[in-house]
View 1: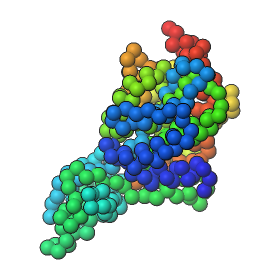
View 2: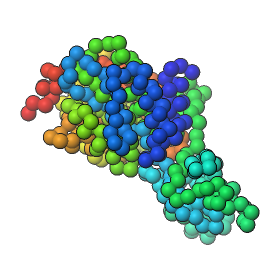
View 3: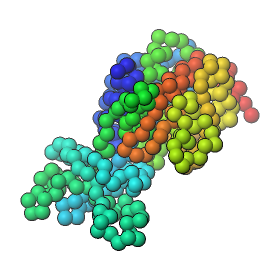
View 4: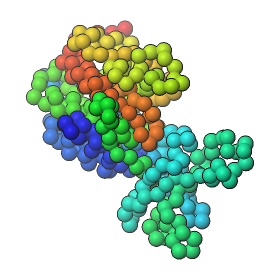
Length: 358
């Protein structure tokens, strides 16, 4: 594995549910310490690496969330664990999947279960079960093994998807859990690494936020630490290259970095978005324009900070987002990395004044 592959493996296989980001935060912190001029924190657990530029301003914030979607213990029935979702899940992606629970006694594996179709009426078997009807089996054995008692499982314990990072037969394609948004966190680290010994006009802040999947919460608190002048979210974007998907754009694996014009929480700042396009074209970086109307990014909160922060989004096309396994293309990652590095080279005080003049 090369540097990027090893980094993606380490941070995708780490656990880090909303409010339980400790394990992945430690990896990110150790990487940031290798390359940053300074490390800052907010009081929810977001971590910020600083790369000082030739001038203090403009302050450019790159935001990526470290948390992943997961589950939490909410109760028990006959030894089986009932759970609440942390983040957006579709029940079709959950049934039969392996998970692990973290308790005071250790980590224990289980499987998400549902009433089998053989025991359902025909009309019931043709519908997806509600998430509330699902449960987790940690090895229940009637009267002999109660996981709640034996494993110390209690309400509020985190339940993490189980999946390994894999390089597929097509060596350009990587598969893992939590690319949303560990791929953005990997970009934060790799950008910082690449510019460590280079001069940039302004000062760059690399923000790994917490609790994005449950309401963009770290994105609301972390800007108060350094008061960004502009912000760019680094996250996954969607693809349209699988059977049944619409094919209206170049949103596909291998389609290059996605520059997102619209999401559910924000209209991308037009002048900033257009400048990202100009940088991509100047440096011959493959990109495409997309909208993501049923999802939101950290910049949905950041752009409303104080009197407003011009914000945009760079995405990595990803198949099967919000499932146990998603896919990305290595060249899309590299294109996004090059776009961010060259953006930092080009974005100075003059350009900031230009995009904020009305």
